[in-house]
Image (cartoon, rainbow, N blue to C red):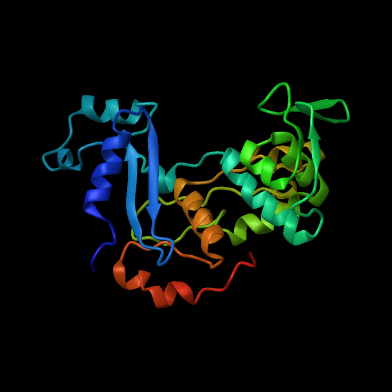
Length: 250
């Protein structure tokens, strides 16, 4: 088996991230799904296990809040934040609830009942269309369209674009993340879904969890319109295989 990792690119990415206290990066070839770089920092020297670790070294690694023993690229689970907004836009367009010219006035917040949901820009963005809202990453715009379509179409689109699943790479520890919806909350917490939870899901926050690998897959699927699958072995990343995946309806 020949790995798809590009050694020079892997070294470059590792070097660029080495100064960060905690970070991860995944680089995919969107034509084939080949994983060209997969990096997590801080890391550790696996060769240290050869002759056995001291208790002090092991405690240092285990107790490090930056989690050097975790491969964050496949096992780190985080709210995707504003990267998720493109997916919400796609869900709203497909549902036919809004079009590219849909306008929203952002005064810096959205009021829902007694609760005020703030935009990252306190004084607001003014009136925006969809393209402007993506460019400005306006929270109020995505609160609006998320509230219009509801959490179910957002969750369905998230799963189609690679969230909430493992990709069966030949690596240990891969996590599936979490795509929340009303059924999940009822089953796990015994509570109903709240309208405000839809709004914060619309900006990639709340219960939503994703891995860096899933974000790379989402971006690849958005870019190509195919159900791209990541691969670490060249045979599994054959272009003919990648192009045969079911379109995701972009």
